[in-house]
Image 1 (cartoon, helix red, strand yellow):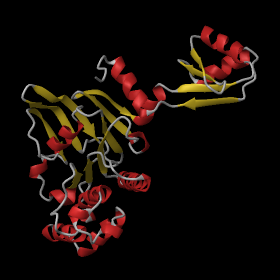
Image 2: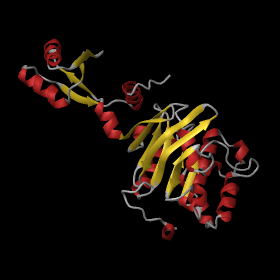
Image 3: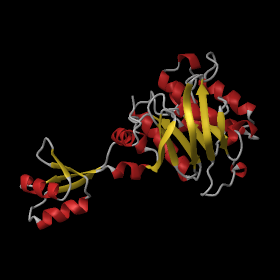
Image 4: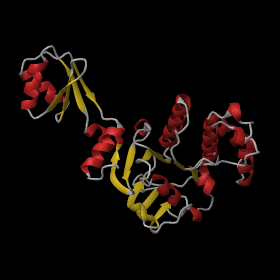
Amino acid sequence: GVEDRVEIGEDVGVIVLDGLTKRFGSHVAVDAVTASVRPGRVTGLLGPDGSGRTTILRCVLGLTRPTSGTAVVLGRRYRQLPRPPRQVGALVGDGVGRPNRTAYQHLRSLAQANALPRRRVDEVIELVGLGSVAHERVRTLPYAGGRRLGLAVALLGDPDVLLLDEPFTGLGPGGVRLVRELLRDFADEGRTVLVTGHPSSGLEETADHLVVLDRGRVLADVAVDELLGAGAAIRVRTPRGPILAAALREAGARVALEVDGALRVEGVDAEQVGDVAFTTDVPVHELTVVPLTLAEAYLALADETGWTAE
């Protein structure tokens, strides 16, 4: 309930990683990661497989013991929280519930164990769109149904903090849209959301902020807009393409020809392109900013830092 909410200021991280390191034998899965996850926004842990994103979540949830450093949530280790399901909701891994119970029975027993009202079960079933399969046995649920059940379990205690490992995996377009809206609403209420994703998972459409990982290290801790805007290209269409291209190259831009005859310009911003067109007396029929995709931004970042993905 609302009376259980922990009041945390904007400037304080709700999830704080401090020098978090995890080794499995000689393999370093997480390498001295320091980051702070703030309330009121969706933060993404972004990286390819093997970048350490799931291990970080498991350390926060007390499922994996760090080799060194700490991971705390709401000011303490997860296992020291007085009422974990009401404070932190999590979806990590695929196994959810006893195979012979129905999805509804599974949620109902969790609600009883945590002194949550029965109506909360119906609420989360509706929230995650589980209604059509709520009375099917867990073992017969389709993969997407299992993922939705996992999400319902994470939301059951109406927690302040959500930790979700690849929440969009296995969901169709409708499911992805539903989860996006859910996470957005959750963050807009001032709660804290940490999700993991692959560079091509479309995380930029959900997250406000990213902690970008490669091989266990932090490449960047940055706002999504900043990351995608920094490498944006300019698309410009003019009947006098060769003249404008030459003038832009002279101004220090990189210019390439698009399939439809438009110019793709990098290394200068839209205002500079407009100014060059004006001084060159070239008519402009289109001038748009084309932001990087997250996958492109990730590769550029990995190249820049010398941590090219293998």
